[in-house]
Length: 142
Image 1 (cartoon, rainbow, N blue to C red):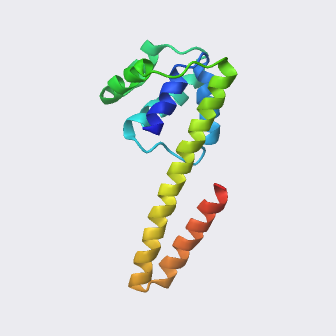
Image 2 (image 1 turned 135 degrees about the vertical axis):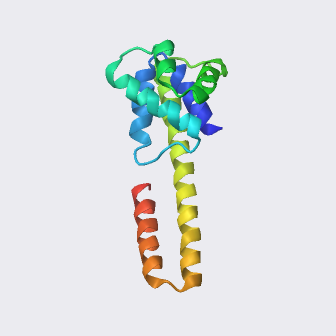
Image 3 (image 1 turned 90 degrees about the vertical axis):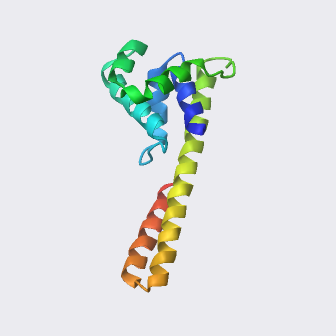
């Protein structure tokens, strides 16, 4: 849901390239969890490497056919009116940070479960590796 809102904000921005760039900077080392949202966002990043303006037709050609309807939906979803483009980009960044936070929490939860499993098995070596990964992830995303 939050990822859908993020893509709606990006695609309805006056400057979607700037919105994609801001989001990419925030979501470093984090991928969107929804396969269709991930495919669309990755396609947009690829598209804007060589393009300045958004061409819906061009991006649609690049997308896997199974996500094209989701892509179209992002243009129809309502968003609030923003006083200017800067306010719109600030909202994109705010939502991107929330998406990142949710993704990190999910990853930390999965690692926590893996630690419990390793403890049950008595596998100290695996447990230590998972703890290191957990701590690195937690420190990176403070």
